[in-house]
Length: 136
Image 1 (cartoon, helix red, strand yellow):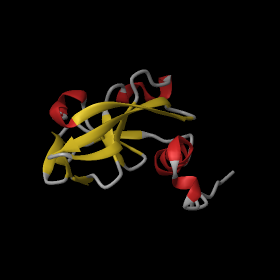
Image 2: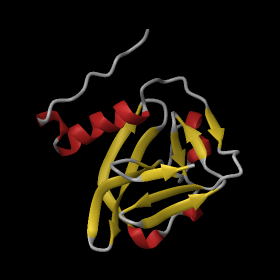
Image 3: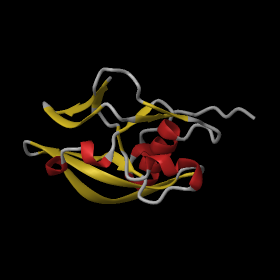
């Protein structure tokens, strides 16, 4: 059965419920998805507001998102968020606010601290959205 994402309205985009809806639409569009290791020679880099947030040749790509190893992120830019969402096959995601030069991008990074078995390979790996540019 194929599902089609319906773009949310402006009101639906506010608050945690809107965040959850956007996250599921962005990173959990289907349940049976394989992941691949980033095998290119080129370094994958996550950039926001002129700062390199993460850099690695060992990303894991899941549903088109680059998940950076935990040791690849520049921790000084990350602050834990109280936001959590749930993906049907990966489990509960936790979020980071990203702060660079006084600007804050709320919930711009997410990770799975204790994912379901199908996503164990991305435990603690960090992915980005909300304007963070990933170059690979």
